[in-house]
Image (cartoon, helix red, strand yellow):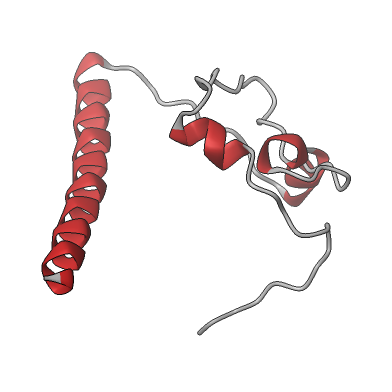
Length: 99
């Protein structure tokens, strides 16, 4: 019984991931047909470092959006709001690799 629930959860997650990928592909095709050019922001080490606040304790406070971009408003209790409020380890803490 537990394995059925796990399988159902895995399939739901996989469907969500594939659905998001399909949406990105549709958006790219739409942009190609309408002639819209996607905005690509430079990501040099200097610009990345300028967007990081070492004193920030959450994702939202540590990482600023790129110059010219605005962080979308997240509804309270939404997944985006939850992600932005995730606590972070201190800046410069070693990264744990599990490979």
